[in-house]
Image (cartoon, rainbow, N blue to C red):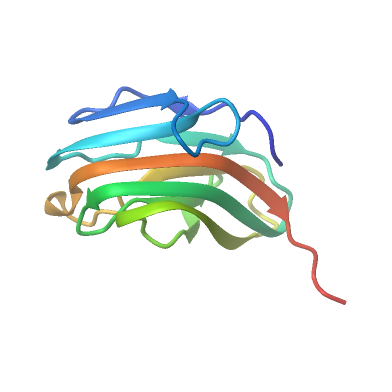
Length: 148
């Protein structure tokens, strides 16, 4: 499940988000979001998916520049049927150069459609305080075949 996704990105308040080529980008562009250090209930990049039941792996490249937030930014995969979370990635935060990251997840049989979103997993408004920048590149989902 690779290639050009039909990403939906909305205007972001208290942040600047855009697609651009940057040093280290694989292909034509990477997604960049720069936060202004204010409360930003960010959940503004998403992709609809129709993955069959089974085991999957989400892979991506990321780079952060002084990305400071109590909860970081995560990829969340949600089942559209009941809006239940299937999986959250480890939080991306701090300072790091381009690195390969991944998230293993299982789509249950009853989940006929999914949504992949980049968001701050805030439980309260104070946890949406965020500053710094994040770059994302080479987002890919692949089926995981069980070892024999």
